[in-house]
Amino acid sequence: MMRKAVLALAMFAGFSGLGSALAQQAAPPPITQGAGNIKRIPLQKFAVPGTGYETVIGIAEIAADVTIGRHTHPGPESGYLLSGDFTLLIDGQEPKALKAGDSYVVPAGSVHDARTGSNGAKVIATYVVEAGKPLATPTK
Image 1 (tube, rainbow, N blue to C red):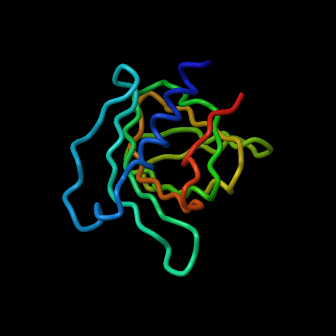
Image 2 (image 1 turned 90 degrees about the vertical axis):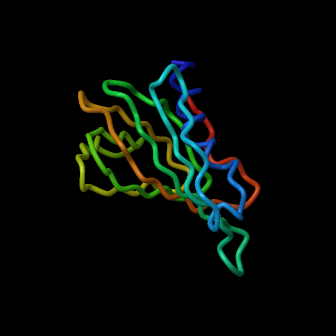
Image 3 (image 1 turned 30 degrees about the horizontal axis):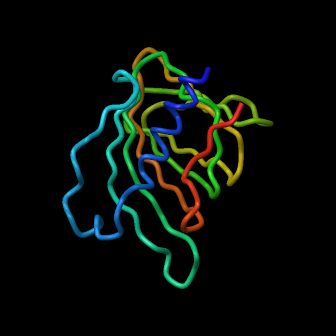
Protein backbone atom coordinates (compact mmCIF):
# COMPACT_ATOMS: atom_id res chain seq x y z
CA MET A 1 0.00 0.00 0.00
CA MET A 2 2.85 2.39 0.83
CA ARG A 3 4.46 1.71 -2.57
CA LYS A 4 1.18 2.60 -4.30
CA ALA A 5 0.95 5.87 -2.37
CA VAL A 6 4.52 6.73 -3.30
CA LEU A 7 3.74 5.97 -6.96
CA ALA A 8 0.73 8.26 -6.89
CA LEU A 9 2.68 11.03 -5.24
CA ALA A 10 5.49 10.64 -7.75
CA MET A 11 3.06 10.70 -10.64
CA PHE A 12 1.23 13.83 -9.60
CA ALA A 13 3.75 15.71 -7.49
CA GLY A 14 6.34 15.37 -10.20
CA PHE A 15 4.38 17.78 -12.33
CA SER A 16 4.82 20.46 -9.66
CA GLY A 17 8.54 20.87 -10.32
CA LEU A 18 8.01 22.56 -13.67
CA GLY A 19 9.26 26.09 -14.25
CA SER A 20 6.87 28.75 -15.54
CA ALA A 21 9.13 29.24 -18.54
CA LEU A 22 8.37 25.68 -19.62
CA ALA A 23 5.33 26.92 -21.52
CA GLN A 24 7.67 28.56 -24.04
CA GLN A 25 10.31 25.80 -24.07
CA ALA A 26 10.47 22.24 -25.29
CA ALA A 27 9.22 19.74 -22.72
CA PRO A 28 11.89 17.79 -20.81
CA PRO A 29 12.32 14.09 -21.57
CA PRO A 30 9.85 11.63 -20.01
CA ILE A 31 10.65 10.29 -16.55
CA THR A 32 9.80 6.73 -15.57
CA GLN A 33 8.70 6.11 -11.98
CA GLY A 34 8.08 3.04 -9.86
CA ALA A 35 9.82 0.27 -11.80
CA GLY A 36 8.15 1.36 -15.01
CA ASN A 37 4.56 1.48 -13.69
CA ILE A 38 4.13 5.21 -14.34
CA LYS A 39 5.85 7.49 -16.84
CA ARG A 40 5.03 11.16 -16.44
CA ILE A 41 5.62 13.81 -19.07
CA PRO A 42 5.43 17.40 -17.77
CA LEU A 43 3.97 19.80 -20.34
CA GLN A 44 3.20 23.21 -18.78
CA LYS A 45 2.94 25.12 -15.54
CA PHE A 46 1.68 28.70 -15.49
CA ALA A 47 0.14 31.25 -13.15
CA VAL A 48 -3.56 32.05 -13.34
CA PRO A 49 -3.40 35.85 -13.77
CA GLY A 50 -4.77 37.93 -10.93
CA THR A 51 -5.03 34.98 -8.52
CA GLY A 52 -2.87 32.96 -6.16
CA TYR A 53 -3.40 29.87 -8.31
CA GLU A 54 -1.42 28.05 -10.96
CA THR A 55 -2.32 25.52 -13.63
CA VAL A 56 -0.24 22.39 -14.12
CA ILE A 57 -0.66 20.15 -17.19
CA GLY A 58 0.99 16.80 -17.84
CA ILE A 59 0.65 13.37 -19.39
CA ALA A 60 0.75 10.18 -17.32
CA GLU A 61 1.29 6.78 -18.92
CA ILE A 62 0.26 4.11 -16.41
CA ALA A 63 1.05 0.41 -16.71
CA ALA A 64 -1.66 -2.24 -16.95
CA ASP A 65 -3.39 -3.64 -13.87
CA VAL A 66 -2.00 -1.23 -11.25
CA THR A 67 -3.61 0.94 -8.59
CA ILE A 68 -1.86 4.29 -8.24
CA GLY A 69 -2.71 4.92 -4.57
CA ARG A 70 -5.14 7.09 -2.62
CA HIS A 71 -4.31 10.80 -2.61
CA THR A 72 -5.74 14.33 -2.67
CA HIS A 73 -5.03 17.59 -4.52
CA PRO A 74 -5.45 21.12 -3.09
CA GLY A 75 -7.50 22.08 -6.16
CA PRO A 76 -9.57 20.38 -8.84
CA GLU A 77 -8.09 17.83 -11.24
CA SER A 78 -9.54 17.31 -14.69
CA GLY A 79 -8.39 14.79 -17.22
CA TYR A 80 -8.92 13.26 -20.61
CA LEU A 81 -8.13 9.61 -21.28
CA LEU A 82 -6.05 9.44 -24.45
CA SER A 83 -5.82 5.65 -24.56
CA GLY A 84 -6.47 2.55 -22.46
CA ASP A 85 -8.86 2.43 -19.54
CA PHE A 86 -9.08 2.87 -15.80
CA THR A 87 -11.58 3.02 -12.98
CA LEU A 88 -11.67 6.30 -11.07
CA LEU A 89 -12.35 5.75 -7.37
CA ILE A 90 -13.47 8.93 -5.58
CA ASP A 91 -14.50 8.53 -1.92
CA GLY A 92 -18.27 8.93 -1.55
CA GLN A 93 -18.98 8.28 -5.23
CA GLU A 94 -19.63 5.16 -7.28
CA PRO A 95 -16.55 3.86 -9.16
CA LYS A 96 -16.41 5.43 -12.62
CA ALA A 97 -15.14 3.24 -15.49
CA LEU A 98 -13.35 5.34 -18.10
CA LYS A 99 -12.09 4.50 -21.58
CA ALA A 100 -10.23 6.39 -24.31
CA GLY A 101 -12.14 9.56 -25.17
CA ASP A 102 -13.71 9.96 -21.72
CA SER A 103 -13.00 12.89 -19.42
CA TYR A 104 -13.31 13.27 -15.67
CA VAL A 105 -13.19 15.80 -12.83
CA VAL A 106 -12.00 15.23 -9.28
CA PRO A 107 -13.18 17.94 -6.84
CA ALA A 108 -10.57 19.78 -4.78
CA GLY A 109 -9.57 17.89 -1.64
CA SER A 110 -11.36 14.67 -2.61
CA VAL A 111 -9.62 11.44 -1.64
CA HIS A 112 -9.33 9.37 -4.80
CA ASP A 113 -7.46 6.57 -6.56
CA ALA A 114 -7.38 4.98 -10.00
CA ARG A 115 -7.06 1.34 -11.09
CA THR A 116 -5.95 0.61 -14.65
CA GLY A 117 -7.28 -2.26 -16.72
CA SER A 118 -5.42 -4.74 -18.88
CA ASN A 119 -4.51 -2.04 -21.42
CA GLY A 120 -3.02 0.46 -18.97
CA ALA A 121 -3.85 4.12 -19.53
CA LYS A 122 -2.49 7.33 -20.99
CA VAL A 123 -4.05 10.47 -19.50
CA ILE A 124 -3.58 14.18 -19.98
CA ALA A 125 -4.32 15.82 -16.64
CA THR A 126 -4.82 19.43 -15.62
CA TYR A 127 -4.62 20.72 -12.04
CA VAL A 128 -5.57 24.18 -10.78
CA VAL A 129 -3.94 24.58 -7.38
CA GLU A 130 -2.95 27.26 -4.92
CA ALA A 131 0.57 28.41 -5.75
CA GLY A 132 3.17 27.01 -3.38
CA LYS A 133 1.06 24.09 -2.16
CA PRO A 134 2.05 20.50 -2.94
CA LEU A 135 0.30 19.19 -6.04
CA ALA A 136 -0.68 15.91 -4.35
CA THR A 137 -0.71 14.40 -0.88
CA PRO A 138 -0.94 10.64 -0.29
CA THR A 139 -3.68 9.43 2.08
CA LYS A 140 -4.73 6.16 3.68
